[in-house]
Amino acid sequence: MNEQRFRTTDHKPKNHTPQSHKKNFNEDSFWEQKRSPVTQNSETKTSYEKGYKKLIAWQKADELAFQIYKATDSFPRDEIYGVRSQLRRAALSVPTNLVEGNGRQNRREFKQYVNIALGSLSEVEYLLDFSLRLGYFDEGLYENLADIRNHLGGLLWNLYKSISD
Image (cartoon, rainbow, N blue to C red):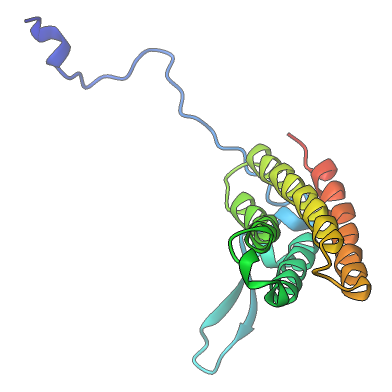
C-alpha cells in the first residue's frame, strides 16, 4: 500500500485564497435583512420578525394557502386524497418555497425558489379551475380565490424579475 496518500500536510496549497461570500442584503428591501427588530418587551429582550414575513408576495401567498385550506374543507369525502389534497399541497408550496428561498445564502438560490413558487401557483390555477368544473366551488368563492391567485402571480413575477443573479 502506498502510505503517501494517508499522510496529512500542514501547508496550504499555493495560490489558495479563501472564498469570499458576496452579501447583497442591502440591495433591495426584500433582501435587506434576515431579521429586523420589531418590538421590545419589558425585559428589554428584542423580538424579531423573520425576513420572509416582510415580503408582500409571501403575505399574499400565505393568505391564498389559508383561504384554500378553508375552502377545501367542504370538498366531498372521497376527495380527501385526490383534488383536495393536491390543491392544498400546491397552495402551501407557494409560501413555503418563498420561506425556504429567503433562508438561502445567495440571490441565485432565492430566485430559483421564487421560480418554483411560480410553478406551484400555476398548478393552483389549474386545480381551482378543475374544482370549479367539478362543482366543488360556487362561482363567488372561485372568483375570490382566483383574484387572490392573480394578484399573487403578478407579485411573484415582479419579485422574480427584480432578483439579479
